[in-house]
Image (tube, rainbow, N blue to C red; front, side, top):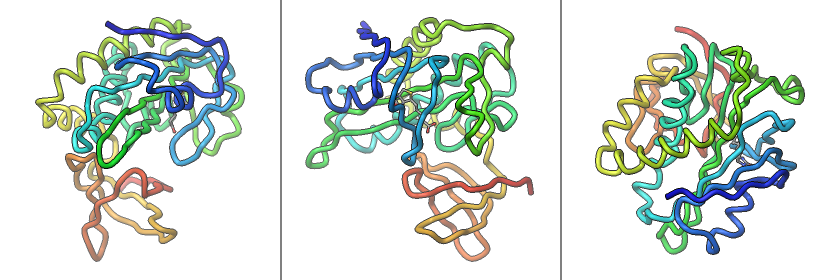
Length: 242
Ligand code: BTN
């Protein structure tokens, strides 16, 4: 059974659950119409103008770090399943953005609370652009929305309900079949076989993406070595076709 709390406006649904995870049960869902301090990956701001589906899910049922590293991957699979039922050409951009024709439609921010090697909570925050967002015109990447891709004004509540339901099922399905999750992920990942430029510890590298590991890292072949790139450490700065 899923439990929902809704805010008209809040700083960030992820921040709220990070601060108060002890007070809520497993699979608590927090939704908002607007966030005043929405956060993205790598310290980015997440703008919404009140035109996004904004929600975070608290997961407290898993404690093994090895499984918890797979949760962001399962989350993007569930989001992909729901959104691709409304449109074509929806691809996953590593690690867990959803893109249509190289324009960003949705993103996921996953944060964990780990004490002495035991995961106490994982917070998975989803942001899906429903209608065109003025503030996003100033970002350095192209964005799109469900309305621009489908011509339909979706209700946030409908998208949230569908994603929460599929994510709940997928966690159960994939907890013992993680290779199935990885194969779905790879099938819809836009980067496999492509050349990328990335920054690691301030140094720029070029390489070809060979694979994704079970931990969700990218395996990249540069001219000298094979590198394993983990999403927290690496900044993809450019993509080009081979
Ligand atoms: C990204 O693309 O960098 C991740 C964006 C995640 C945004 C969502 S919106 C709901 C939740 N609360 C936040 O502050 N961030 C996530």
